[in-house]
Length: 186
Image 1 (cartoon, rainbow, N blue to C red):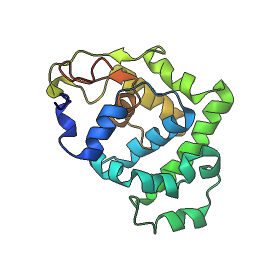
Image 2: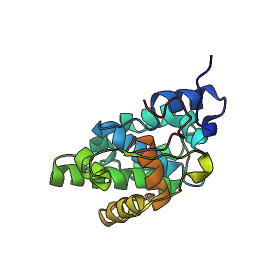
Image 3: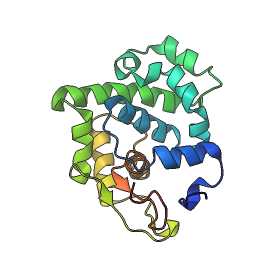
């Protein structure tokens, strides 16, 4: 019998895998957190499935989201990326990855860990919500607004409150699985 899932993932196998194995699970790996903040920003104005389908291309194109390498990208590398049909070829978004890599490294240098710094916005523990329906789930919260403001202040781009909330959901900082989803208590 198929498990009961949140309605947003539908029946696309890639979405189902993402929902079942990743979304809403607490993430503390620095590289993975950097990947997700970049990919959530890349999603702005698009559907998440569009980015999810291009994820492997992003990983290959952006040196496995190695922030130290991305921070060194020059205009020639950016021009090369803008020719890559496997990613969203938006100059502002590609440039944001480079800006975000530099800002990410600065946070690591200052605080020792991006993970510890970013998780402060939820007090170091996942916020477990109790939504019955998808319609109850907010697009942003006070925490995502505070995160957005702090990230922007530190030089990040494409990190508005809605993007930050999607990042928080993706990285398990909030559990927004609906209560009748079999993955609510995972």
